[in-house]
Length: 197
Image (cartoon, rainbow, N blue to C red; front, side):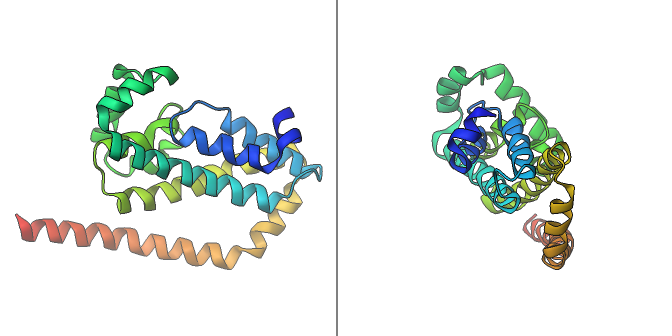
């Protein structure tokens, strides 16, 4: 992709970040292209992973705070310029209401929700801590998927394996902490809610 060859990592970061605040960008294509370029030695695969993940989570959290501060009326007023109509926002809000907070984890994989999940979560006043944890998990999975696709397309699988092997212990520890802490957090909140009722 020409924009990556010209502007490199800042272009990757900006395009992924902007998508998180509701501005349509070709973020998936850019991430895949960056991983392909890394396979040819034009970019660093570890940097592509770190920048993609950081920009995705930062963009979503920026979107969350914009949604929290601005609220639904302002989102609708400005959202029309980027295709976020009242009908689309209402559908997304209903989807959040039906599926619960855990939809944030998979929102990154659903076109439309990927661009607006932060804005919606902020506008419906989802607690930030609950949002941030789920968004980080979704961002990590999304990054892993599209960087792997690009690495496969760019013949970079050996470097992906080496990178994963290097951080295998860290990833296992983080995964174990998340697997233990999320159910505990759920039980704690449920017990707390029961004592307040």
